[in-house]
Amino acid sequence: HAVETLKRWGGDLKIESNVGKGTCISMEFPFVEPPEGFASKLFLKPDAPVVILDDDPTMRRTWLKRLGTPQSQKLVGFQGSEEFLAWLDSQSEESKEAIFLIDYELGSGLRNGLEIIEARSLARRSVLVTNRSEDPAVQSKARSLGVLLLPKAHVPWIRVEV
Image 1 (tube, helix red, strand yellow):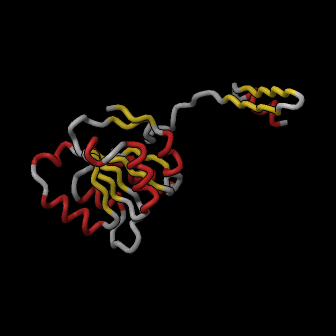
Image 2 (spheres, helix red, strand yellow):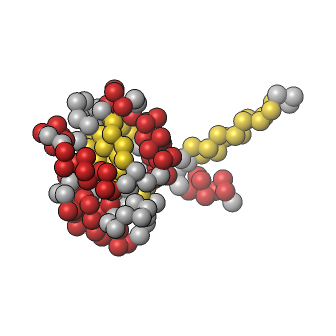
């Protein structure tokens, strides 16, 4: 049943087995464009800061692995909305080119990521990185603001272009 389904989707399954050596199973899936409103890749400007707002330290570490050292890409990470907003208020012209990777749920903060994006007019430079990407209310609000969604589970595989 699984092989038939995979082939119906345009994929393939290959099984190679050698006695005494082992078995290799390969599954190929066709590339599918993400749905409208979801990010298919991240475009980073070479000298622009990348600002990460996420209360989950694991996600901040994942972004560091994906994007390099803070010095190589001007990475700035924040756990809470208050420290992020204070940093934003203290920035000069440089932050006007920043790309923002913002979580929806920010722990104990009073606002969610979309509310911060809207209040600070960051929509054109923000991606909402969230586990709530399938929530119709989150999708609707993001769409109305023009903010792309990126499911957290896709962060390790999203294509990054500088």
